[in-house]
Length: 119
Image (cartoon, rainbow, N blue to C red; front, side):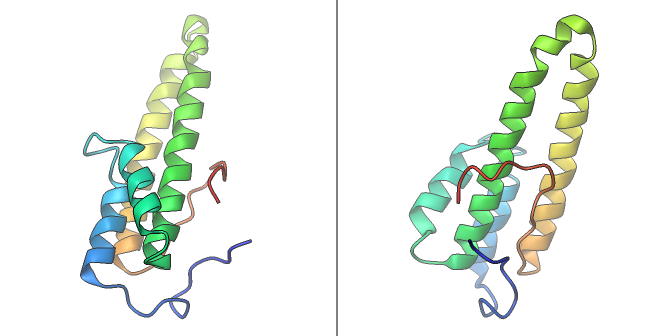
């Protein structure tokens, strides 16, 4: 099992590494969703542990949000689905921004309520 990425595990990340991790966390805001973290994770997992850890966290989060949204769609007919989808959308927006800020500082944000599907 991987340990959380600590500052001592990787010396300060380079500018390109920070840019890729920030883009992974903000990928839902720029309209590419799951695709960008998936591509970055597959392309960079052998090159940079920092980028791979952040891309994996982002990918797991985006997959979890997708699962939560798919489970909420049938609940629209019971009226609870619409507010639930709004909460999921706002939560993913806020958590994505928090994770991007943490990644810009050189850390790795661990999203709450996320299924760890990609390890």
